[in-house]
Image 1 (cartoon, one colour):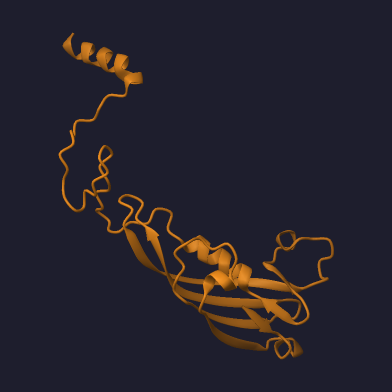
Image 2 (spheres, helix red, strand yellow):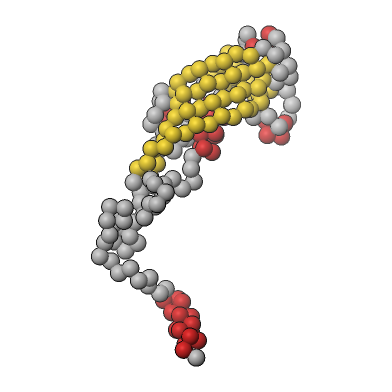
Length: 176
């Protein structure tokens, strides 16, 4: 998402709000993981602070990911709001944006928010998405989805052969 800053850069304190829908996230943003099939609604308010440009961005979309326990596809809403500062290219000579303490640079009075949008969408993804809080997961032996019903597998936990000697030792202590 590229914003033309010509009007905003004319006067300190001037701000403008831009709304855009990214219809095809895979074309507009690089390296997104699978699941971002819905449009991304972006609202950005950009303000000239004098020495930099401050962007306040709100994102809304949804993502489809597999449940981390049963692998059932789950569609979840993603809502993100963040603020980032950008400086003109050429300022902070020799410093990377991270070293300068800003999100990035803009050139030729054009501000590209794509990297920040991508980064914040990825940070908003849940680490372990669940189809429901009490998801039972899959049977470790046969792979049956335990949310759909039980299976006929043995439910007693098998002792790891590497720990069998320890199990016998613990059982012997209980008898003494």
